[in-house]
Length: 110
Length: 116
Image (cartoon, rainbow over all chains, first blue to last red; front, top):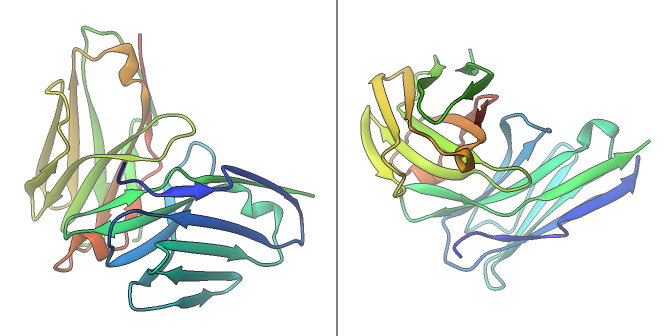
């Protein structure tokens, strides 16, 4: 499969804790993106990291990319109940499309 | 306006019906996408339009027929669907800057389709 693998498939933590999700992929990429999806809704773009970048920050989000290991991680710090959602990595493959990973379902418990 | 709108929100149809899903964006984006998403699965790309021309068809059955009347509108015509086609259908758009794979995609809220 060209799709990325994410782990864990599901993650449940207490509000205020940090959440880390991982994404692995198989082919060479030109960028990797992370999206969030609230239940039954559309996806929202969170952050894009290019293949020549190693780390990127946006607010409470920190993304790393290790192209030698073909893996990326998304860290959400100081989690909030509103962060409860599914998180997908998407790899830019070739010129034409993104391929989405299987996703991590994150639950933040109050 | 940074919104992608989709109508209807919900659709129930029989296997002999013909229906259409509609998607609209006013961000000046020149690429538009249809995705299919089953429960607890990632979105699967169906079609991509770039500058109103079909650029990708991911071997989708002919009972799904896309149409891009202009740069702001994208339709998906449905005919003789099967119960396994029940899913959330997502529309997205992006700027189309040389490489679609580096674009940020903006998604609509989706149409929940049930085929009886």
